[in-house]
Length: 320
Image (tube, rainbow, N blue to C red; front, top):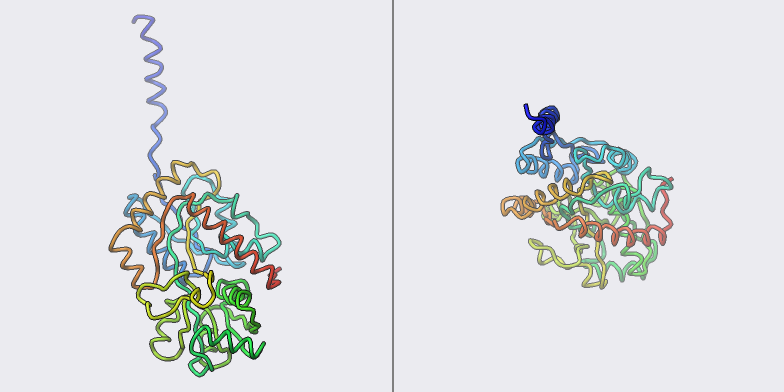
């Protein structure tokens, strides 16, 4: 055998000994939802997981890890291997709000995660008890100004989007309304319909059936503009210019996840969100598909972080 052939034989043996790295994903992916099963985040996660699994030809599992306002699940993902197989499907709470509420949430949303994609947003609706002495947002604000602290509002709990959205309204409108926190949307809605509290903000998929049944009165949506399918319901920005609040959902990976892996996930999610069938499915539940690049998501997250930080500080809210 010629001496010159030996290096090539050695290289061939080495190549055979080291298997080629399979393209991502080569094993199941886990979506961590930092809230209990059955909520809006969980529903969106399971719907997206099924479609992403089909898109990437790999199983996508949804795992609920609730606790500490979403911090438990977020911490777990922040500490996971940055390989693209453990992802966080979350809301503004863990990704923009909790850092202002907790002294040490156990992670930094801006540095502990690599943004993948902004997935969807759900309109937040301002609703009132049908017997309340106001029928519009403008009338509510006028009444609250004339009767400080006479009104009370319910929320899903301290530090939740429904809580902070009302604090945003109070700040912009210059009114004082008493806060009654509940353990979730359902008990707050029950007391609203029973007249224990007079107003509240909640996700439109939860409130719309009660509005249609005449058990709640819709005063407006917190979205920057009117919502398709609810065109007769004014945006609160028509009464309070610049007012905006949405319940949004985004997907992030642990920091240091390879950019190529993030790109694969981002493009797959954008393909799913552009599907007419999936867009219609989301629209049927009052959900708006979003999408965009990881940079778009990071910019949006940072803007939300700054906005809610000011509200938390102004309202003096602390959870630990």
